[in-house]
Image 1 (cartoon, rainbow, N blue to C red):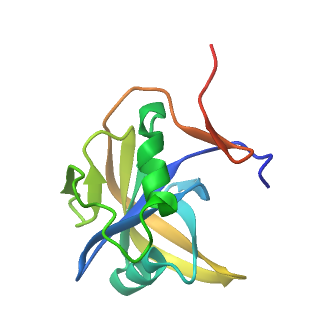
Image 2: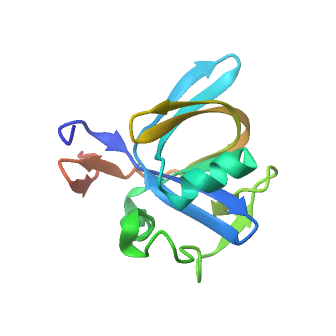
Length: 150
């Protein structure tokens, strides 16, 4: 699957112990009417547990200048620690943490979820969002971060 190029996102959630999130490339648009998206989260992750508990999450689309953030949320800071420490963010209308300078974000509520092997597929109903930047997207291909060429 590393031969599949994909965009890079953060899935973020606000829980009782504060904000948390993880880097996710398994994200896709599912429906325009109603607006639905799909994410897949590993069942043992803290983010998975928090999304399951709260029924809310946001997806933040990352740009090429945010590789270090993608790495931070992909395990550069362990899942058990506070990944948002020292990072500027705000809360969406739905209460999920949003980075101040991503490309865009989608504010979602869990509409449905399905177990699938080691992961859970969450269908998110998009309740709001915003385009917040116009840089090129951050991409991931063959175990490396990439960017669009000219």
